[in-house]
Length: 139
Image (tube, rainbow, N blue to C red):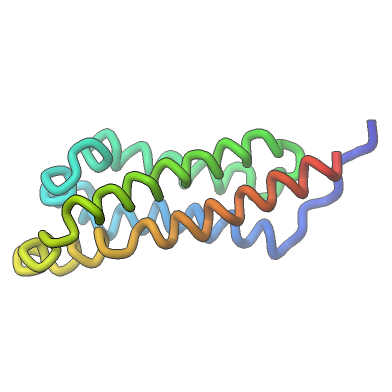
């Protein structure tokens, strides 16, 4: 079997960016896991354990930033994981978007989070899917 191609620097940087989106985004919007409104607003996705899991996913993206080309199936799992969050976000918006003004009156930061988090997940999910497909072909 041929060796996998070397990682592309731009692709590796996007893995680092995806990790930062998860790690620093969750730490910011959860206010270091001290914002109870995230869990109250969507307990199925943003319980304390769910918030920790999001940070762990971000760490996983960082862990493969320079070796993603060797693990295309894992990168495909990342794409599926992002799809789950995009679908959860879309469902939340369909069911609860009308609550955003009330959330904003209590915590503008939390309202901002719920109004936009899935858009970033969509972009990174598409990136992971593209990378998995292209890395898999190279093998």
